[in-house]
Amino acid sequence: DTKRTKIRLEEPTDVGQLSYPSPSEPIKTSVPFQQPSSLLTFSYTPKHELVFNDSALRYYVQPPQGADLNYGYDRWIRRPDERGRIDNLLHAVSKARSRMDANGHDGKAWLSSIGIISWRGVITKIFTAPYEERDAWELNVMFRNGTLYFEEHLSEDRLVEKNNIPPRQRIQMYYGYAFESYCTSDSQNSTTPNGWGGDVDTNVQWCSVVKTKLGDTRIIIGGEVDCVRGKFTSKTDNFVELKTSLTIRGPLDEARFEKKLLKFYFQSFLLGVPEIVVGFRTPKGQLSTVQTFKTMELPRLVRDKEGAWNPLVCLNWGKDFIDFLISIVTSHTPCETDDEPVWRVKFAPRSGVTATLLTKEGIDEVVNGEDRVGFLPKWYFDEVTE
Ligand code: A3P
Ligand code: MG
Ligand code: MG
Image (cartoon, rainbow, N blue to C red):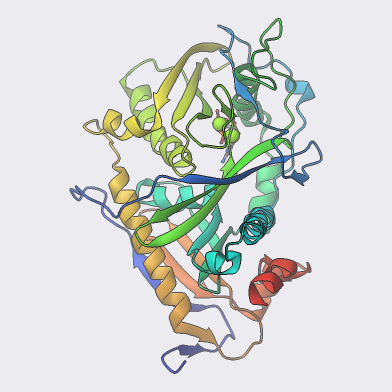
């Protein structure tokens, strides 16, 4: 392709930047986002192994009033923080593709029509960026057969930091999981004497993989779903997201909570989760009240408030971000390496994103001595390359 810019890779090369949208601009419309529909679900076992069944599915139950969220803290089995590899999502995509083939459809053609494959956490970060004032993030990006693949890039330092959380912060984190335990049961109508749903093991997760569309870009998103209300029917319409937050005591707390709702909103919206149950708690972990929010009503709830956010700003930004990436990956090519190109995209709050093409050393760091092409597992790369 003669239109492609050839890039020498002695050092990371800037290939472009996208500046930040101004959140204060009045925006009335946005690029359409299709209601996500379920492709498949899977579970992680206590060994954090992926199984294609719903063994980790949990059912919503009313949590007991005044529940103690410190309960069971010393028995918490905590999965260590690791690099958020895309492998298990690709197993699910591969499974969906072979199911399609088995049903007489063209799984390969279907897969090549997908514009983006990513975990939900990454897509949430992208969409909420216009309102992010504190945390920077970095992604690794690859492009293969028309599909963009995203992976969060965590530096060695950041990983160590994530695994050495100060005790006070660690117990606050546990409150979220304890709330999940009180709110769920592994069968549809069972309750235990104190309402405790079982000790927390964060290896165990139930995940949903959905397909959706932003403008013309088809997207496959995978993420954890906390529980379902009632019977599980393979659809997303009774999925429930559970959240905890400090009890609101005044206008300042309220504003802080409404700001947080943006993340709750996108996290849930992206997987088609229609309901968010928030457990308000004291600083010491006593559950005070529980309130249910309809995901789709959250934007209206915050609309005319101070510090309001507008999801349309986020969707438009998301579209610009995708267009920016597509223009970069289709117009640049490395000239001194046989490695599959990997791009590093860096987001800085109040500024925007920059993209660079990684050097051979950068790619080696991403591969990390594993059986990978860039950050894609070799088996998957071969599957989409055949
Ligand atoms: P809360 O959100 O109720 O505080 P999720 O809400 O996504 O299902 O995650 C469950 C819990 O995991 C959270 O409960 C929180 O304690 C913890 N958690 C999730 N993402 C986190 C993050 N980025 N940093 C710290 N803790 C996180
Ligand atoms: Mg969860
Ligand atoms: Mg949750």
